[in-house]
Image 1 (cartoon, rainbow, N blue to C red):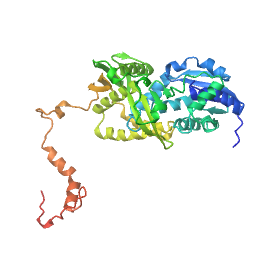
Image 2: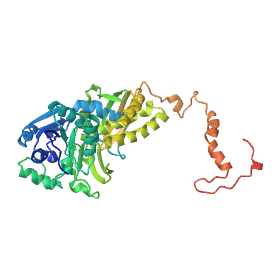
Image 3: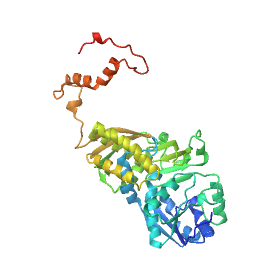
Image 4: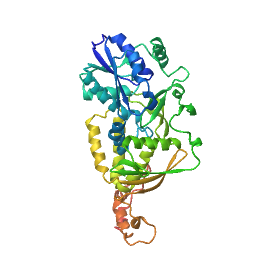
Length: 419
């Protein structure tokens, strides 16, 4: 298949192994101008030295945008309010950042008059879908170049050799070959020895959390205050969204909180093993759940759990800019008004232990729930409720229908009397 004519392309550039080799490859294979775009989403030291590295690789210019606050306020906190977790463990750290990065990449393409965008996601992973669905949603006119689906590089070892041949400096070596993605919310680890699901992660792989065994021997308490489902205060200190996440990352990492080791089902169909460090996000999710437990009625809370599963799928599958995600957000927003109050948690050796929760909108009443003496609940009312609630079960039994696979004897209706 012949390559499309490209004049100028904006590449999502992290400075990591995959995107480092893309710049010279695009120039060689498409004979086009290459503009790099880097999003600062909290990856830290990876931001150092990007501009000279990109220009030395052949890029005409590079745009670097600080998106940490936007990520936290418009994406992470929406994710938090939804309660979304993918396949029981994954707090969607990489997934949630991709639509934000791609949105700004499209904006830069418009700014410089580019006719194409490119990304460094492989043809085996989920990120290719997340990037390209966002491109499609925001500007389907842009051509999309995905080098991993075109070039002869078939492994990270090949990419390392290509980088060396083109004098592109990289951190990865054949001895340490983890694939990592970091941002304000989490740090992920894939590849290398982790490709064997029987292999326990080596302790020196972790970068944001200490091992629970090495965590302090004394617990630490933290209080988080929410307003309508959004956290804004930690231990009495009001913080910006990004600063709040950073603060909890520090606390959680110190106590070995937020590690997840899982084998997940990728959107493209295969299973993959990943290890994630999400200390602050894990604390926030626990606190948010505790607060919801006292302010949301039973039916709303249970239905929201169902919505959370679908929300997680949409984020994981790259459907952030979709009508369904917006509709689910409308439901989530309608539930979050009373999610206002304070939660106290105890952090201890990888554990988050609830230590208190309070809200002006609490539905909990001690005079109703108490096992002691009270005069606001008439226990005799339970008799009629149970009779009506159990009526379908009674009818099944009277009709001789099987229960739990067992045949029931057919009743003698001539001897049946009304209670």
